[in-house]
Image (cartoon, rainbow, N blue to C red; front, top):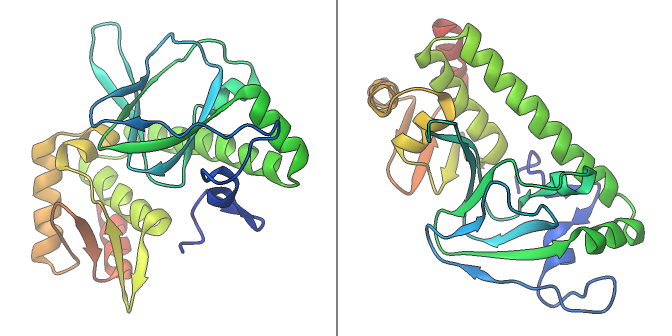
Length: 231
C-alpha cells in the first residue's frame, strides 16, 4: 500500500470502518448505493448534508464556470473521501461529483460522521488531513498555473501522481487506471494535444510507458530531472 494514500492514517483502516458489514454509530447499516458511469452523485447547489467514501470505482469532482465551461478539480479513486466540506458548515455544494465508471460509495450524513469521529480516536485528524491536503493541492496547482509552462505542469503532475498513487514494482512505479489525455489536460490546464506530445516525448526517452490501463514510470529520478529541465 502506498504510504501517501489519504485513506490510511494513524492506523485507521477507513475501508474497515465504512465497509457494508460495519454499522453506523446509531446501529443502522450504512447505505452503499451504486452509481452508473457518467451518473451525477451530486450537483452544484445541491444540499451539502452528506459525506461519501468510495469503495469501488472512480469519481470526478468539478464545477462549471459562468459560461458553462467544465473545470476539473480532482479525480478520486477507491478509498478516498469527498463531500467533506459539509462538516465545516457548507450548506450548498460548490462543485459536482460524477461517477467516471460504475462506482459504489458509502454515504454518511453529517450527523453520522460526527458521531463516528467521537467514537474513533484519530478520525477527526484524518478528516483534517484530507481538507488541509486538498487546500494545499489547490494552492500548488494555482502556483503552477501562474509560474510554470504547460510542459512543466504536465511532468510535475505525472511525478506527483506516481508519488501519491503509484505502486513500486522493482525499480519502477506503476499507476493503475491511468487517466485519459483529456483528463490530464483538464487537471493541468493544458490541451489534450500538449499532453499527448509530452507523454510521447517521455516515452521516446524511455522514462515511462503508458496505455489506457496504466502508467509505468521506469525511472522516477529521470522524470524528476525532466521537471528540473522544464522549470
